[in-house]
Length: 333
Image: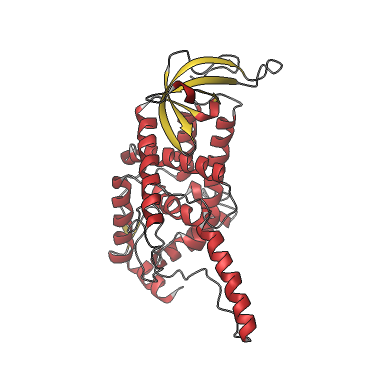
């Protein structure tokens, strides 16, 4: 049960994990106090001592920087450290060249997403028409500034458990090689998964806190983004006919699926595709370092939670599409 607003969530001498910049460190709570004596619902501040650090590093931190010392959060701390090391290694070397080679979702998941639908094209705009030498020089300077600005943006590196990576590769093979389809409507749709994850995770967050608000926004945002992104970037070509059929059922105005959204129909096989695409998508936004750090934490938690419950949410076998579907998919009807 989540602690009430007028009680500290962490007790004296409790072992915790505390954010310092983008990493989580083991620490101990040495004291606590009300953040604002005039606001009973304003939350608490906690004095922490970092394990292995001098007392000069002891600090008063808001509750948002603390995490319970659980196996799940220890795994998160380890993953954040791995991501940081990977970023440092990448910064010390050369940036990888962009490739147009088509790969399955999950085939290049060392931290950035793989966009593998065989019918998606690059989102890069076409080159501008050639102009004068001066114009080309100015254009080159502007392009260099844009590239430098993009490279210097904080990155989101999603650590995906190996089990989920293998599911993504199997998903690609079943659809593109074996001409099979995931069951839609799914026995365990994305809406069900997100609702149950929210119910579980909300117990660990104080009602009315910024952590609780972030969780609510994150879950609602993932659902909305999936509904918007599914038909645009998350499907393989072979799945398009199925998508059009589902779209008709939802928009028909009658029947058991009328009025539903795609997250009510599709399962976590497709949600995983969104998760591995999000790092690249976030890189093109104007999110600041703090917002990106919080987003990365939420993504890590939800993927870890899913990885431990694969049999519950990703269990339905893929189905052979049938000859009628194959013929329809070939003709685009």
